[in-house]
Structures are given as structure tokens and as C-alpha cells.
Image (cartoon, rainbow over all chains, first blue to last red; front, side, top):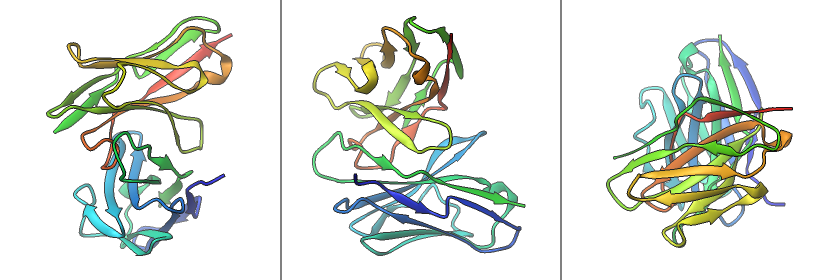
Length: 115
Length: 114
């Protein structure tokens, strides 16, 4: 049963620390998305990649956030330095680009708490 | 630009009753519309999607939705609610058919009363 995996599932850190979240997309999917979910803002798109190239990162605070795809099986989202307002659940999703109506498959999320 | 409005942050229905979750969208191009469900501490799972084919779309778990262009709506329905339907439901829109990022509504928490 193919699924998106994310690590860690939970992360508690102190303000100012670096946080790295990892995502393994479904094998064969060439598009990877990062979303953030908070009570106040709901689900927001942060960035997405196609064939490992960033297509849109306009939703991401550029000064402290960075997203990369070192290879086709790994996507990372880093926050440095972290702040309490970054506390949220971060979801990775993967999908294809062939045709329309493509489903995005979501991982279980990383719950980040910044103290 | 595109946006989604979900009317009602919480909806409560009795078990066996009709479920109706409302979604209105705004899009400058023909939209592709999705409904996702989120159970506690889990990721999102696709319920159904509209991709410009049939306007009445059937999904998993007995849910369906109808695309109404004149009303810019894509409401989600289920004839008979089950206790297992209790969850958070999100409507989303994409101008790129889901191959680009989704714009989500704020979500509707569905409560099922026994």
C-alpha cells in the first residue's frame, strides 16, 4: 500500500533552534507539496516541486524557511531559526502531473511545537 | 486568484440523517474541485473530485457532490449519516487540476449525534 511518509511525527523544540522535517513521496510521483495547518489560518500551501525543481514557494516565509528535494525520494522543509508562531502541523503531499484531476496523497503530518 | 468558502465551521446531524456540507468557490479559470476528509491526528484523504466531466460526482463512503457553475457551489452530501463520518471536511480548489497547489476552505467539523 503506497503512502507518503513523514518524519518526525512530533517535534518539540525551543525558539531559535533549527527544525528539519522530511518527506518520502510515493514512488513514481513527480510532484511534492508542503502545506501548513493551523487553527487560525487553516491549510496553507507553502511550496511545491515538480521533478525536484521548485515551482512555487510564494507561501513560504523566505527569511527562515527553506525547502529542497535532494533526490526523488526525499523532500525536506527546514526552519532556521524557529519561532513560536511556526507551531503547526506540516503536511507533505505527493501527486503526478499527467492529465487533470490529479489526486494529492497526503502524509500523516509533522506536529511542530516551538516553545 | 481563487478561494473557497465553507459555510458553517461545525455541522451537527443525527445518525441516519442527511449530511449537507456547503462549499462555494471563486476562480478566474474553470476550476477543479475536491473534497477531503481528515480524521483526528491523520492526514487528508480524498473523498471525491470534480474535473469538468459529470457535474454530479460520486465518491467514497457514500458521499457525493454536485458542481453548479451558476451558483459557484460544490456542496457535499450523504443521504444517511453514520457515526464513522464524524471528522473534519475540507473543500479545495485548483486551477491546474490538482497538479498545482490546492487552495483550501477553513473546514467543517461534522458531528454525528447518536
